[in-house]
Length: 308
Image 1: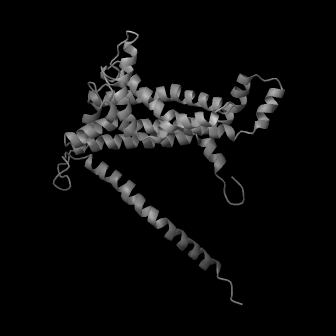
Image 2: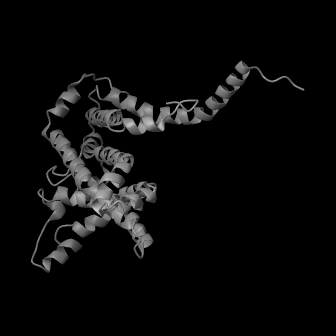
Image 3: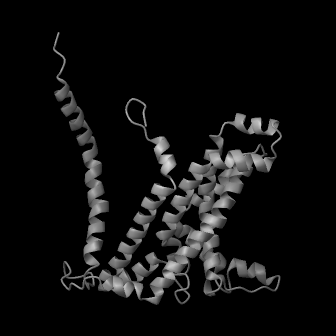
């Protein structure tokens, strides 16, 4: 009978196996995520048009000083705040309401779930092209329908209506995704709790307010997190629908970065914008996990032996 391997040899073998399995993913992560971030940070300190090798015209923080002193970028930040507030206060509650409705025993609910989730399957480009045809000034389908009632609206061509129109398209595209998240969270709540509350005389609203909603807390927090991160990086829909217009009234940070980096060949300045977007996303993620999702993460993390 062969002797059992020494504990130290077993540990080394286990770590070698873990390393070999993790190494390909780690290499890809370094090449596709970390390296571009470092390149963007490096390029943001130079005045560079993106050609002729590595930049050499070092200007320090001038790109960032210029950035925060530009009215367009300040407007981009305001658009970000507006879209985040609209998403959190309107889109997500609407998705939650639809999820609660489709959790009931109603005829055809499977079909409704499929129909509501279907827009999320479409790519942003297809969605943008579709709604650019529907909301286009003059000959768009929406204008043709409204003209029957004597109503005229420019939608995407009017600075006063372009942001609500953009939010409408975002909601159509993504509410089904959040609906499915909430629906999955609701189905993980034991029905016995709901039935016990109803037996005790609780109304439908009180049952939702004091039982369903608190137990959906982790799901809602994840949904809010994903919605905010997506809004910070919003590009595809805006670029296809409006290109940031009219007169920068629907422009986002990603659209501004595209404009300066690829159309005006100001790659250093565009890199500064990308760094700001990265820092915003990182800071939000860290703060949100630290103060909002702290209890969820603590409850999901255990140590060996079953102790927290």
